[in-house]
Image (tube, rainbow, N blue to C red; front, side):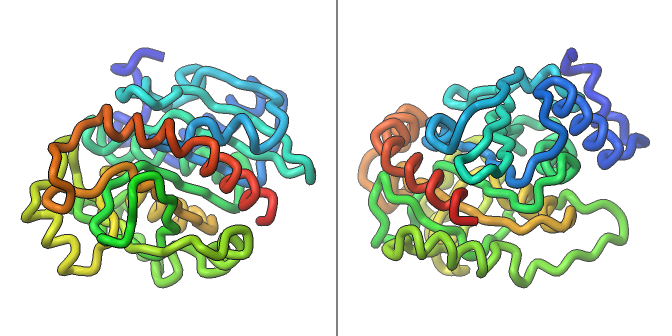
Length: 276
């Protein structure tokens, strides 16, 4: 599918119908008719797909209706169907469209809506992010307890009112802490990007209650909740945010921190998924 032909770009199109078509594509291409849990693997989390279970099928995301080419190094661009040892069917999304790519919020949340259309009732969202909370260190996984959406946008269209009180499921966070009781929790702030935040913006995030800053996840979580899914969020702290660490920020630093942490967080995620 060419980017210019993406059906989500038609404002008259129904994004949920397109998600159902995408789910049918996944069923056809993978041979798996239904999934139980979906994982979106952000920066640093990609190797988790190798240890969650047995890979049944891997397909290029661009063969599925509505999916875009990944714009960022470190993102795989595939969809994978995995069978866990306990028999759960996992849809692993390695093709995330970021808000800063400018394709519109429908494309940002299409993977989540597609996951729901495949039957998944749990959405696990992961990302690499900057730490505002000074107790965090690079390489540390943090449970997302809540978010602050600073994009000034929403995936909800029209008079659609969705309760976000327990957006990042308390039940699922409890399960994650039974796997690793040392997991800290924090509030994630999604900025628009793609530039990193200024030191003043990081201070603002801390003042309004943020512990983590990044460029993804919040819009996806809202769409997952709209679709009736339970949401679990993880941030890998890849760096301390601007003004907290002394050195300039770089995407190479994010990738390096992700690679260093991969063995630990991959096993953690696999154990959490198996416990859900």
